Length: 289
Length: 289
Image (cartoon, rainbow over all chains, first blue to last red; front, side, top):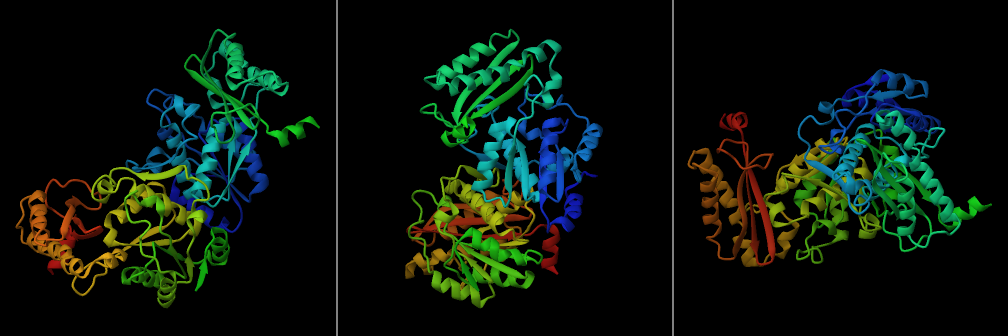
């Protein structure tokens, strides 16, 4: 695996591989099993796999954790290589933004709720840097995790709206044995916060089970159920609990799937997110078999 | 030359030509000698030349001339073929916007003055559709006219900011023998309006000559001179006369080049634009030789 820091060098390196499939796994580094599952999938489907590591200042708000976001390039390089990455692209902020960037790619609608409401400008930063990475790497396929469900939906929309010549592949959330969704931010958690954080997925699972049993009469009722569950944990401070149509991320008129149930919860300064997708009729029939 | 109406067919057609240089000339059709000069230049520099004709609804304001914008596909096809176009891409609005588009590409700063101020949202429509065309055609080079100087500067900025893997080539304005810049909108002009419209370039030329002689002490003075000249024509209604730094399109602190002197003038409902670029020191020295 080669580690490459400049756009020019990366393009040169990719040139001879352009006739075969190129896969891109864009990350902010501090790789965990979730990222590795994306790289493995890319390796299965593509001849050349590029993993990018870039903690993108554009997608962090002024009071967010850009500075303290965990970084460990040496360990990341070892892990990425082990699961089959061919090129590790680790540009500096000066390489990605050599002068003040005046251009933004924005997706309306999908970005207004959930993390878009809590983190103004966040998704503009994501879609802008992902556009740049798409233009630099020119991948045939790009891989994103379902844990960041809204991000995946926003990028899908952008790719379709702007005719990016690539396929977006969304891969399942990878979890700890106790259900906590893997996240680079989990390292921020104290022992006690880590213990209580299991409430996110537990509450989502319980809500999903009850939804399948037809126990809820409205999205509000389902959200209230999850809120109550999460609030049993004294360190949990809810940012949002939201049931929306999926992937449009609009308010649901009823509780027929596909829906997304998404939560964001603070433990101290650490903000964790998780979600489950509740299937539509056809998919639900598959589950029932 | 093949005429192609769908994105899928165009991509299929271009596939075997991707190893050689592809040139794109994006137009709104009703081709004139200005467009043809872009196609000829593309043909010189590229193996395959794609000319797109798409009157993009996204870049017209509600009270602008989208509906009556002149169209003549048969004549356009003949002209494009004569000067060497290989593929003529003529998508419908439904092909380009199969569902409401939620994504926008916007360039801040450069779009605030000149036509950006007069036509709110116009450049967002331009950069968004040009992004789509770039992703559909994946050209190595894209050709634009200097007549639309602000558009060219905005697209240059977008390409650099978002790392589009292509080169933007800006070609000189083509003019009628009496100096009027060629424009598809010139057909709107009555005989009398057409006669008076020569004042745009005449006033710019006179201003440039005086600027070279050091006759102006400020941008405001230069603008006033041009306004006075244009207003000698009774049918001319000035939208703007503006002297800005080029290509940044910022207010100038002095009158050292490179500057752009840009005008937009209504004749009846018809809005015409024109500009000259005043060179910086090095270029000016070339001229003086």
